[in-house]
Image 1 (cartoon, chains in turn red, blue):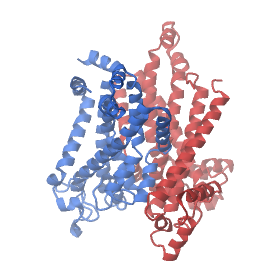
Image 2: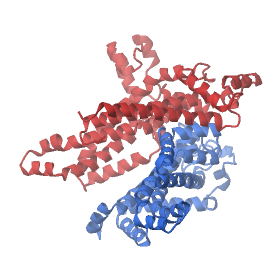
Image 3: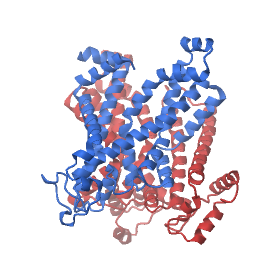
Image 4: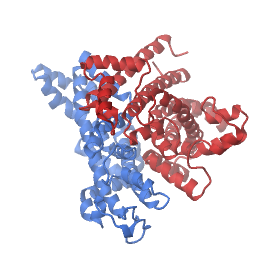
Length: 340
Length: 292
C-alpha cells in the first residue's frame, strides 16, 4: 500500500484550499470586475425595482469584505442564487442535470479507453507502418478538431442525411409513455435495465451513441497517443526484452508484463483530461439537446443568465478539483512507481 | 535559443514531411491573416455588411467555392477574412498571457521564500479551473467583443507560463554566474531582468508560439457559446455557429469555417510536435542519426 494516511489528509487539505481559492476568484470575477454587478445579476430586461432588489440581495451597499462573508455563507448554505431564465434556484437546477452529464461523460470515457488503448498498442507494435501513420494522422485530428463542429457535422451526417441515429434528447418521449419508463438514478441506461425495460434501454443507447462518440474523440486520441508512446518505451525495457529472450510467448509478454506498465499512466492522463471533456460537453450537449449541466450552462450563456452561469462555473471548478484529487490518489494506489 | 540551434531545428523540420506540412500550414495561415482584406474575392461580404437576397444558400461553385450563407454572403471570403481575426486573437492571447505570466514566474522563482510561494499559490488557484471555464466566466462578465475575448482567454492562460518560467528560473538562479553578479553588487532587479530572464525565456516563448493553435480553438469555442466576438465579425467559431441554424439547408456555411479551424490547429500541432522533438536532446540525437 504505497499511499499513506498522511498523504490523503494532506491532499484533502490542499483540496479545500484550492476550492476556497476558486471561490475567491469567482467572487472577484463576478463582484469586483464588473462596474455594476447588480445589472448583470438582474438580467437584461430587469426593471428598476428588480435591479434595486438585486443590489440588496448581493449586499452591494456593504464594504467588500462583508460582501465576501455573505457570499461564502450563501455558497455553504446552498443558496446559489436564482436563475432568471428558469426562475428557479441555481443549485438544484445544476444537481438535477448532473446525472445526464455524468452518464454521457462516463460512456464517452469507456469508448475512449476501449478504442484508444488497443489502437495505441497496435500502433506501437506496427511502428513505422501504414497503420501507424494513419493512426498518427487521426490522433492529430482528434487533438485539433473543434468539438462543437464535430458534433454539428456528425449530427448532420448520421441523423439528417443517413437517418440512422436520433439527433436530439436522451430518449424518445413517446416510448417513455408507452413503456412506463421512469427515472430512478437519472442514469437512463441503468434505470431502464433495473426496470427490465429493454426497448427503453435500446432507445437510450441509440440516443447516447452519437454525442458520446463525439465527446470521446479527444480523450480517445489522447489515450491512443499515450499508449503508443509508453508501449514503445516499455517494449525496450530489460524485463520485457529478457522475457522475450527467454522464449515466453509474445502474447503473454505483451499483455502480462508490458501492458501493466502502460495502463495506469494512461488512465491517469484520461482522468486529467476530464476538465477538457466537461467543457466539450457544454457544446456537445447544446448541439444534441442533451439535458445536462453543459446544456444548462450553454443555454444560460446564450440567454445571458448570469447567476446560472456563475453557479455552473463554480460547480464545475469544484467538481474538477475533486476529480483531480481522486484520480491522483487512485493513480498512486494502482501504480507503485508513483512517489508521493 | 542560439541561432545555431534554431537552424538545426529548422533542418530537422525540413527533412520530415509531416513537420513540413505543419510549417507550410502555419505560414499560409499567417500570410492569409496579414493579407486577408486584400485577397478576399467579395470584401463587403467578408466584413458581413451586405445582404444579397437573390444569392442566399447557393451551394459551392466556382464563383463561390464555399457557397453562400443565409444572408447571401460569400462564405469563402468570410473564411479568408476570419484568418485575420483568428491570428489577431491568438497573438493577442498568447502575448498578453506572456506579459502577465513571465514577470510573476520570474519574481516568484527568483525571490523564492514566502513571497514566491504565495505567488505560486495564486497561480495554482487559477489552475483549479478547467481550461476555458474561467475564460467563459470572464467573457460572460465582460460582455462580447474581440478585446474582451483576448482578455478573458489570456487571464485563464498565463498560469501555465508563470509555472514554466518559475521552473526555469529556479534552476538558473543558483548558477555561479548569478552568484558572481550578486557579489559585484548588482541590484536584484537588474540580475533578474538582465541576467536570469534571457536564459529562462526560450522554452516559454517557443511554447507560447505553439499554443496559438489552442488559442484559436478556445476562442472559437467562446464564440460558439455566444460569449465570443460580436456578429458580424467573421471569426471562424462564430461562422460555424451562425451556419448551424441553417445547417439542413446550407451545410457548407458551417462545414468550411470549421474545416479552416481544424486545418490551422493541425498545422500548429504538427509544428509543435516537431519543435518539441527537435528540442529534446535525446530524441534529437536519434533523429539526426536516422535522417541526416
